[in-house]
Every structure is written in C-alpha cells, then in structure tokens.
Amino acid sequence: MKLVVRNDDRAVAALTARLVADLLKARPDCVLGLATGRTMERVYDALVEIGHAEALDFSRCRTFNLDEYIGLPPGSAHSYRAYMNDHLFSRIAIPLENTMLPDGSAADLAAEAARYEDAIRRAGGIDLQLVGIGETGHIGFNEPLSSFTSRTRDITLAPGTRRQNAVLFDRDIDAVPRRALTMGVGTILEARRVVLVATGAAKAGILAQAVEGPVTPMISATALHFHPDSLAIVDEDAAPHLKHREYYDSVFATDPEFASFNA
Ligand code: GLP
Image (tube, rainbow, N blue to C red):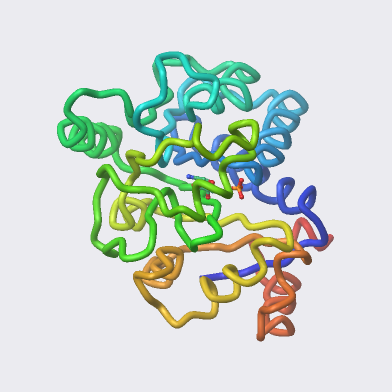
C-alpha cells in the first residue's frame, strides 16, 4: 500500500480525480470501479470539472459500482443508482448502459450477485476501483467478519453503518435499508488498482486501524494489504492517528507518480 496525506478534502478529491482522468486518457475503454458516499461527492465534482476542462472522453469506459441497497421502493431517490446518476453520470457524456450497479430489487439476489460477478469478468475486470471507508471499516458494504475471499452477495448492514448513512435519508434511520448487495472483498481485491479515499475527523480512528493494522476481517479495509497496488489518499483531518506520518510524507514528496503535484 502507498499512502498520501493532502491538506484537505478538496486536494484529496483533486488527486483522486486526476488519477481517474489520467487512466481514461491512456485507456478510453477502461473499466472503472465506483463508490458512493459523501466523500465521493467531491471526487465526482472534481472529475466532472477535469472532464470539461480537458474534454475527457467517457463514451467508451464502463463502470461497476460497489454496492446497492436492497428493498428500496422502485425509483427511490436514495438508491445508489440515483446517487450515481445525480453526482456523476448525468454530468458527463457516458452512455447509461455502460454504467452498472448490482440490482437490489432483484427477486433472486444470489442469481443477481452471480450475474454481476460475471459481468465484471466479461468486461475484462476492473482497472481502477475507488473505495471509501465506513466507520465500521467496511469497503463496499463488507461489514465486520466479511471473508477476504467473499464475492458479490447480500449482507446485513451494521447498525453503525445505518446510523452513518441516515444523513443521506433525511436523518431517518428507519428509512435506511437493513440489507444490501455488495461486491465481496475478494471481488474488490481483483481490481488491478484500488484507491481508498478517506476524509474528515470522523474517519481518523478507523483509518489508522485500516492502514496500520493489524489485518483482520473485522475491518475489511485491512484486506487492501493483500493487494499489490493499493493507494490510500487521505486528508489531514483523517490522518492524526497515523503513526508513520514522516514516512508517508516522504513518499508523496519522492514517488515519481506524484511528481507533477510537487512541481
Ligand atoms: C457507504 C458505502 C461505502 C462508503 C461509505 C462511506 O457505506 N457503501 O462504500 O465507503 O458509505 O461513506 P461516506 O463517504 O459518506 O463517509
């Protein structure tokens, strides 16, 4: 894993969006793995901005989202499909048929999970997967005890996750679904690159555990230590409990990948 600390959430979003934009320029037919949550809103704002400024071509890329709630009413504004349409897809020229999320309203959830895994495989796998981190340490909706070999499946959400996500349901916890379909940890680990984004003081405790270990299925984000190319991009507010700050700062200053940001 590489870790970089940027000043604030804007700088985190700018760096994350730059990595996605550079991939798109190099490979317009790339496969992007996308995530939801408040952290990603700034990332998508930054990506839309770069898209306009640099005439990025999104028309040939395909996207797979990490997860979707189960049991929302059809067309719910709280679905992750609605989130993605609002925050990204409606703001860039991407054909909606190239944008995939698991279908949380499927009658047969196991069949839907298998179909989703197959669709990722047939697309040639995910080139770059964005992940946020929940306060339970989840990536996607892989709550504590998720096997590091888990695949896309339905899962019960932790009470803490439902409380955290209630802000996106007008603070009505009862409106937050109890279950979701999520890519598994094993699915996420097969992406060619995984970029974890964490901002804000609320993430400081769980981020330190996720990044500096110990590795445990109680915190699914720790599985990223088994990935050969994972990168964590975090802001100062999320970073105070990290023990090896001096080292991380020297990585950002010297790694050629970040040279243009240090120029
Ligand atoms: C939801 C998503 C996660 C995401 C998390 C972080 O739980 N399923 O994939 O990491 O939100 O949310 P936020 O960015 O709002 O803190």
